[in-house]
Length: 209
Image (cartoon, rainbow, N blue to C red; front, side):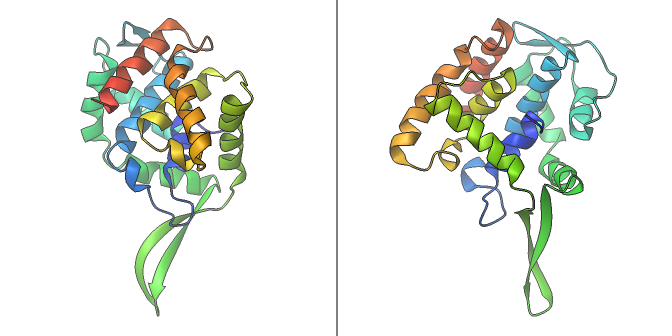
């Protein structure tokens, strides 16, 4: 995936027509993004996970401003769910940070809706849809063609399900039924190690109490 897991999750959570966050994701998107960041830092060997407990291993920056900001705030010895709860209060504006990052990369662009010359609101337009399209194509290949997912896509699909936006990718009712089954089972994918599997299962309980 050319984007971070958090960026991919955020693009799916944006309504392509409205240019705003989907209503279904309003409550879950911040902890969803933070979960994606922590698990990506694990894949990058910046943190270790033992029974869901975080240990910061490497504080050298990744080159991604959002991942680096999250890395600086992680606490060794804290369970990932507890840390995400703590971080959610600290990173309430993380959506704006991702907007800025994706605009800078030419993936999103800001558009103001106006009445005459008076700006009324701002929407995020998908300036380069190829990035999101690739994500959607891979997710569909995982569901319909039994394509083997990478660890990043296991995490992404699980979090898309947890954030209740799977129907944004799978619009057809029958397709969604198939996608839900795959998303539920993907936490046991052989593409991920036991630590990630355990964390995804605990995050599922966190997002769906």
